[in-house]
Length: 305
Image (tube, rainbow, N blue to C red):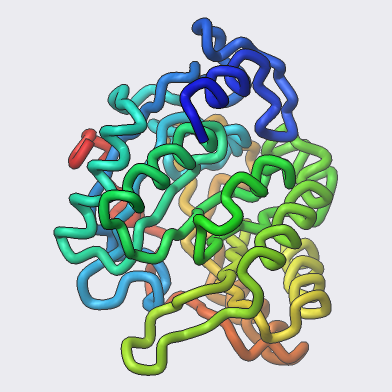
């Protein structure tokens, strides 16, 4: 990916399903809230991912500013709205990747990088040419265009997508994206095409290649969660990992519909876990204890950027 190619794509941005056609190269912003200038809010060792992604030394997570989805309940609202972050160049991003490798990260974890895909591809190519050998994790809400994801083919080893909603009504209400399920399923299919079945290193227990699909339970939506889990298992069987999360936290500052102003109950979560077991999901992760806490949200103070 050359700087000239990046400029061309940024002049008429169609990276995500919003299809804004914004001239980000000349300072316009799309739905993501970002121009063509890379912005990141944190780059540090991160220990709050699934165990096979963090190991003993942590995942090298880079949190990008802005987001193309903008869920009303977003846990990372400060950065998804683009209010936090520091402008950097692709060369600086490549240096950040290499520094995280030197710190002992077990992988490089790109958190919500979709609206900066061309710049990130360029940074990965620069870093790999300078000695980056860690697996690359692409961490996404899955509201992605397949054509954009193809830019990552051969560069990303592990995909960490969400599958948030099955219901068109829910995705429209909570993310202004009635086509979310259709777009996310196509994106996950492309991710699977690139990586194939999940592969765990038997010596380290770390994921070397493949997919972990996350689903965050929302209060009062067991039907939607069951439909998502059944779709994933019917489609990919036990060739991917499915991570079922109960950490939904109604945060102050988010303008939430009344039904989202509570956490998920233990009974709600246990019923979904029982359903997952009943339909045959074997490769999965679940959360224990009081995970719906604000302490799970890192400090976006531009550390490491």
